[in-house]
Length: 135
Image 1 (cartoon, rainbow, N blue to C red):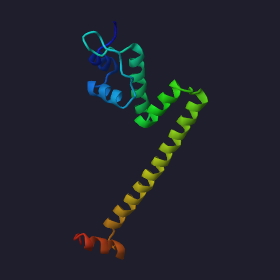
Image 2: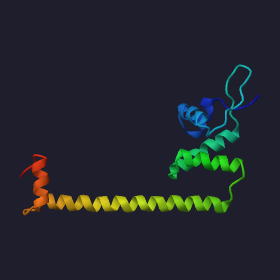
Image 3: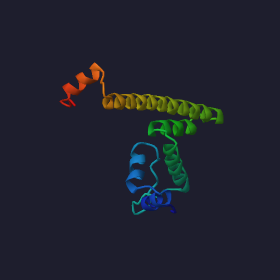
Image 4: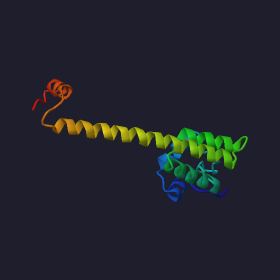
């Protein structure tokens, strides 16, 4: 029986052996057959799947989202248009996160400006007093 050992699979996919074990336990990688001596023997398909998982993670997909896509592709199938819809939703989600971070950045810049102002707003003076940071 031919196949890749777990360490060989991990090395080819450029992941840690524990990552392979974790993905197997979470159902992202199917349990491989074993050799007569009990070693797990992974196929090239397992390598392709593992690389796909890593690439999907780099694109910002969660393991839950990846598992759902893999399960759907094995069951009823997933079309290109389904995949584009998922990508569009992920892009929208990232855009919302960026907008939130930009708002937070603006708020922090404003707070910094208020903290360095000569005539501090009474609310800022109150906060500084509460934090024992009176200047």
